[in-house]
Length: 266
Image (cartoon, rainbow, N blue to C red; front, side, top):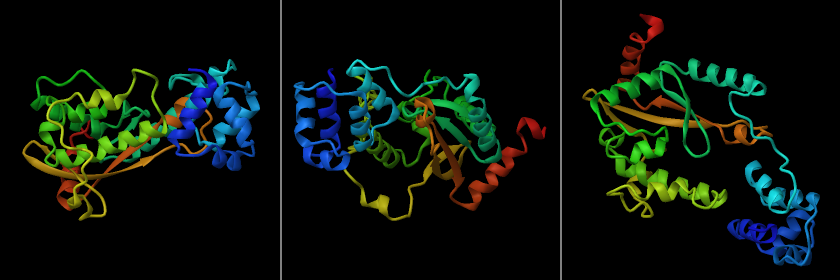
């Protein structure tokens, strides 16, 4: 896709008119029109200004630049890259210090990258009870797969509706490359609830807790998500640390019991 069509697609996804984008970026609406129709070739600086006005992610800014023939601006390093060593140390610190409760690191597509020992132990308990565990590290796929988390989540329909709507918003704001939509993969799973239909029961509490059955015990969690606020690397911007907290005292006590069986405590 050329730069003009891609720019138009991003603008329309943000539900901005050419005039609104013009006021936001101080690029004339006429010039934006010429760029979108291909009548003018955008400069690198203009594309960066428009990307800022559209609040594009670093990945999408790189894509916009590349579509116009420019070298991408932002690097995309692996977590194993030496330059990312301080990031890995920070992630390990956060994960370890969240024990005895589970915590994970995911990328922007919900792929599991790191997990603390309580999370690993919890997953091992579920896998032991589910012999056909799916061969995927994607958290949403594990939730929707009948052989994954799905049989253990008591409020599976509520959680599924909420997370599918969240994924829809994510892809609307940061469109995936053609043929790489996680949402479309998820919608192929069987017997999904009507995820576009909101259930007013979800509004009864300040947050929706995950109700998980483990070894015959119900564990109730809520979670928080943290990101890096000053990322200038594509990988780093996409990372999310999801930390789980007990929603009641019985869940807190259960994880206190689990902690006594962690490797460091044996």
